[in-house]
Length: 548
Image (tube, rainbow, N blue to C red; front, side):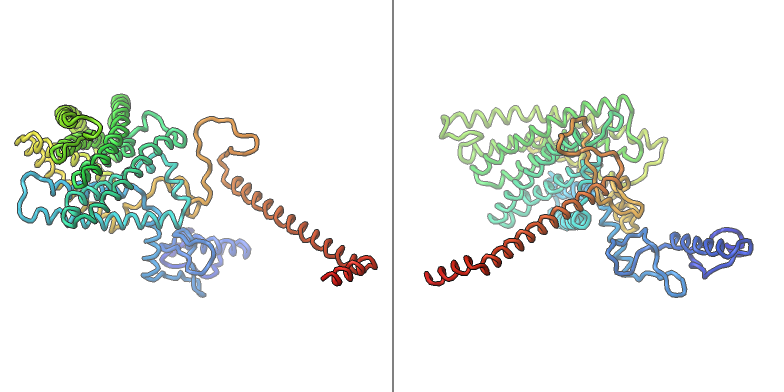
């Protein structure tokens, strides 16, 4: 028995049938029935890409073109590939830069392990090169995404979660600069050192924009509540902490004057990030106590508060180490002997070194508390619920890596074998986590089921395309200016109609102005011609010719 005889619609494998006459329907109803069957079969077709040359942008929701006989036209392999690449580009969010964060952390840790063996540096550099390719690939896809669909940038920026992953982009860039400072610049020489320094200043500017700009967007454009607070809030502010610690590594390869200038900026960046991170830790602690641990989908975000502590401790140690080295090289610290006596730089370098170590230990201890809480929460949830893998699992790699880097630095500055062992163990755990998460991510990426943009799911039309109009997103109450209309009632069709009417009025005013100017020109020409044909006009013309 066929699908039609069962009273249902045919499946898409059979293709839309020709005109079918139902025995219980009159001819007009049968025609409507046949059209409905064809339309339903087209909707259920697995490939819904328009192959015709039209002005509209094709999407996977469009109707499948058919041959003259009515059967669906099967897309070629190239067409399927283009359709899939288009879908991946559309759903490529900034959260993918967390892969660059984790990979960069692994390369730096392997380069700075206290227990080295032959070939470990080569492995570190290979991972560094792979991370550069990842960063360039992700950057290229992101640029293509916002060039093809410019409105997606604003949709992403106004999303309360996805916008925060812009911090991952800055942190990933900092990870690349760190390897440039500790590996590439010493091997390549002075020119690459200058490039690394300039690259770091660009990174510092972006980190400041993200650290200050995204909280401003949260204050004005996002709708938040205490139960929806996640540790992802820390990504924008952690970007300046990571950038400052990277600046400490860059300062080691610079001249004393440039190193002092870089350290000034590093302390400012560290302060802007760690102060806000400490406030967010308090807020996140309250959220955890009141609303309990996050659900299984985002449980790995519980590790993110570790990042400010580990990287903050490492940054303070690195600044103190570079300052002490500056004094030993040419007798300078944060101040120059030109504006003080020769003893002041030594006192300052020693004092900063002595104070930074215990403060860094306190901050590292706070990170240890967050690490234990995060592991306990994840294990407790795993005992009763299934943990589903997603891209957020890279949150396991970077925070623990910062704790390992700080422990390795403690071991070097305090000559502590215990910290060397702790740092090595944490680094090996980070390496294993990175391998596991990378393999899982590549598997899901090849299957294509990891590419999903939450912000796009809320701001798309019936075809799945991003909205061409992004409404004003101010969430606070304000009195609109009398001369402007900044209100939005949620009706996108009315808003689009208003914009079209405004453009129409502008075009009408332009045409009206042009017609008025043309009318005035015609009147002037007519008046000139009439005056030249009159006797007085001819006499004036003869006088002008005589004078000439």
